[in-house]
Length: 129
Image (cartoon, rainbow, N blue to C red):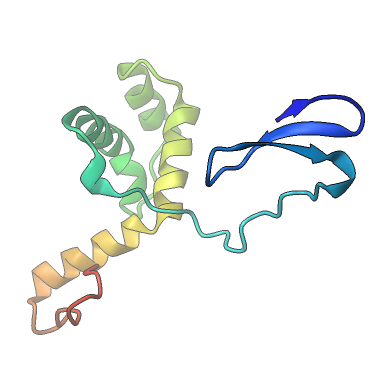
């Protein structure tokens, strides 16, 4: 958006990419999305470098995800070994837990250890956990 004066702006339509001149009095604030659920990325678009980085991060935070209390000294040591600050690992672990991937991973692990008969496959069109 570009300000043309106190009463006019030039704005780009996000769908058509067209520039339009708009009166400031006609503008409305953008409303936040109705859902606060984070959007999961399409993992099919990740390249090998991104996958390697994801595996590296998961390896670094794995002691924080197993449900047992992990001493801060261990986190600091792991962070230093990777050239990071401990707060980065805590942030990554918090994001991973919030993503819901940890729950899905545990369900998949339980399915493997208990057998598929205990956890039947989802009907076609419904993603597997």
